[in-house]
Amino acid sequence: MSTNCGFSSPGGTPVSTCPSTLFGHFALSATAPASGRSARPDIGPNRVSAALLLAGTSALLCLYAAPAWAETAPQAGHLQYSHTPPTPKNGQTTVTVPTAAQPVATPATRAPPAGQMNGTIPPQGSWNNVNLLPPLTSRPEAYGQPQALELKPLPSSLLHQGPWGVFNANTGAAAGFGTVGYYAVSRWAEDWSSLRDKRNHIDFMDPLKYIPLNETGDIYLTFSGNFRQHNFYDQRAGFGATKTTPAYRNNYRSNLGADLHLGEHVRLYGELMSGQAAGVNYYGYAGGRWRSTLDAQQAFIEVRGHVLGATVGGMAGRMTFLDAPPYFTAGSVYPSVPYSWNGLRGYAFWKNFRLDVFDLLMTNNAPPGIFHDQVNWKTRLYGAYSSYALPKFRFLDRNSQIFVDTFFLGFNLANVAIPTAKSSIAGATHRYTPGTRIWGNAGPIEFSVGAMWQGGGFQATKTGLNRSVSAYAIDATLSWRFAHWAGHPVVGVQVDDVSGGNMNKSQTSSWGNFMSPFVPSAYYLDMSTYIGQSNIITAGPIATVSPTSNTTLLMKVPAIWRNSTQDAIYASGTAFYKYRPHGSYVATMPQASFTWRATRHITLSIDGEYIFASKTLIRDGGSSGAFVQSNLELTF
Image: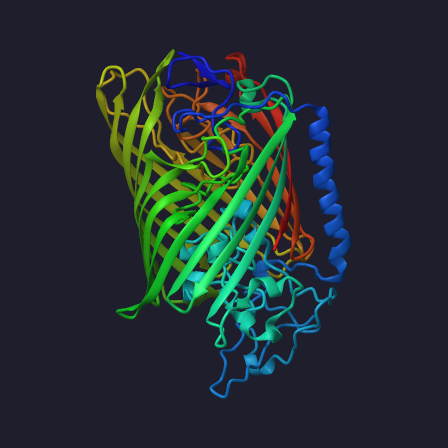
């Protein structure tokens, strides 16, 4: 057995630095491509200070300039107005958006008909209208948080979603492209065509969001960009298995995207991205996803049309992918460079049903140099995802919407390991995962209940022995929204039951550990990412509240047990700790995340968590400790 940052290494040889992570900070050598670069030891305090000064100066400049252009953000779940009405045949448009003097509709009230909303768009530079800022739920890191279902869409000036009808609920997450509000997790999912009408222009950056290239305006170009800085503090990273002394890490991401629409049916999207990372006593920067010079993060062509009463489309090239439950994957946003995939994707949307099929290969970010990313032929994700929207209904005088999702997720990994009582076994695995998820709201009750079964096999590298896989995962949240209370709090409970294996069985017996190798949302279970969605039973309260119209606070206190005491404690689906404690109880992890949407273009947040390790884990060498991270995003 060898260890890598406290985790078992499938290669069986010691390594000095953590390879590319699939889960926030941790080395997942089992799925990482062969590393072409190593962590740079020459980044000293002066360079770190210079980087921090540069980021801080950028933030101050943006904050200084922001009041001339920006407004205070509302809480997304409580702005529910109709879209801008379509253009009448005479070519004139009546633009209806809320003004500060108009009441804000809540889920318990009905928005007035568009004709009764006499508000007009404020002039550019207006900052005193609290109703004209993007939803906080469109923050990429927040994907997977409890979110209010937006049963009545926001105005077109604030909501840039595609033509997906009822599937634009839950800030667009129901459509399968990640959250889409004012901005989107995947920037190509935004639709800025409403800016054809200049009366929908409310921001000084709008001229870059819609650049018409012909007289009719159906050929146009949209630019997008983002700068993100993350700061991390780990008192005892990975229960002390990764670092026994405090680690300070910071990373930076810059990206620029261009979305060219060639009429109604064809569009091209390209995105460049670079990232750097530094810190003191840091870890986990090898592999290319934390430090990357410049490369094509996304580049694809999409063709869209109408067939059999459905809006259908196909995508080919390099792209992000988020059409899976947030407890299965959320794109891995902690590293500088998130996941991207290469392959084919097709979708179809009817009025109440959608279908998505895909066959994708992960991007290998390890090769050094500019534009050197490659296709990782050994990591594949394929399958289909469908969703049926039940008819809308009223319950407890509230609009309600429920979705029934069914899916099949398959993946192949060429370099993984499974634990043994004292060591590990390197090999390859293929998994297929049918599942279902029922989620939505019934009046003030917001819920998500999902179940997955996983089959497949694991083949050991040295012996060639095969082990069949039979595993399961059940994930559920249940909350009540107090829409009329100050802060509109949502209070509920979260439980998870994810199966584990048995290290003590023979090497040809069935393996029962469920694997989610593509990084579930850190905000679903554990912000520190010390605990993964494998071999766990969790239970604990969750709550969200909006202290002001442009802030949110997420709180949760999960208690963690091992599903099987005959299996290891996992940091992710593919990386496990060296600890082998007695007993099932692992830790309790109280955590909170505070987000401030300062302007349309500036979002700041701070997250904190304390990991109370169990006595048995501490006796086996683990330790308790704090985790804190801050986040600054500059977006257009």
